Image: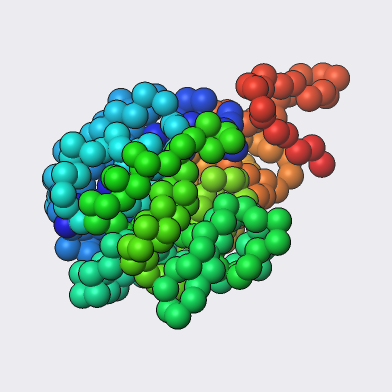
Length: 354
């Protein structure tokens, strides 16, 4: 079997962060989201992985490399335009050949991985198997209707859903999906939809099995979803302090302090992760916070937030919560009089002022 990871989307819902960074490389639990997908596929026993890349291909390739760090071989496949998931499958046609494969959306995080799904697919050998989860608002997702234990119908974001089973961003296919993708037409938004391709399989008598997951999963396409995933993943950490913590500091709970990080006269209350080279000084870092490598936090309080690499947060007069602060960004209070707010913000930025 082979693996196919989609990492070519533009991440419009996470702008301005994604103007300068691939959304799949935004960290949760201080690890790029993309890496969770690669690790899940490798853990399932699949060592030949193709990654669909787009405009951010150079950054993705630099981060994931040739796959040796994960114990696999990675092949990069360029998709010039994000024209739908089924179009991505066609783009990867040469890489996939006649192989059965798992397709994993690169901005998804799934509890407990996909090992059981892959084993089930290899044992039962349907033409396709789709991962499903019960959700409270199915109209926001692709929705599956089941009959006799098989997938009978798929609808993309229906106004009146026939079930509460949403498509999770993991699919298993044999080579017939390539025929299906070639046989469908673009949707109203100009994309080749994977739901249409799977519906083509069903309508042509091919077998599509469901696999309903019991644990949590998250599509990290919005900031609230990123923070939620960060919270859950940090809660699974085990205490590990390899950096330097001075005698005036308190580190308690599920906290990871990587080698090279420095904590001075501060409290870090887990679950939290402090990246290599970061400095926490005269500050409070509360639960569910990730501080990236080389970041600086001085005379501040923060919790339930993600700070990317090399950002700087200093002398902020109120606690920072529920925030995503970009790489090399700087948030600081100045000493100028009269006191006033001063901003330099990119397109689609958002600032909350207390």
